[in-house]
Length: 60
Image (cartoon, rainbow, N blue to C red; front, side, top):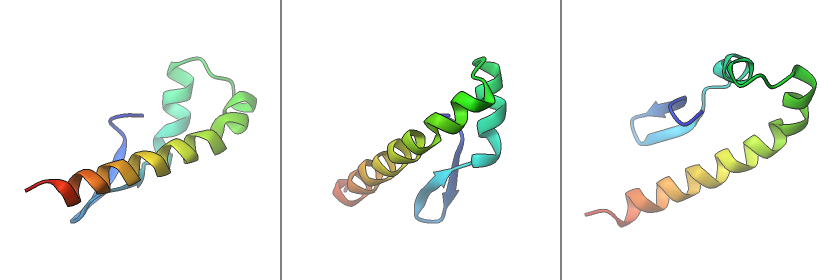
């Protein structure tokens, strides 16, 4: 999903959830397993957004 970010004028705003099923299918992740790991994906998304925001704030 690293290339599947939605981006606004201020930078990334979240993952493009429309792509998750396609990426999961490519990785042979079953629908049931995807449902189980989706909350973890959201945690990772939130943390990545926080880190990217910090990097924007600290860049010259």
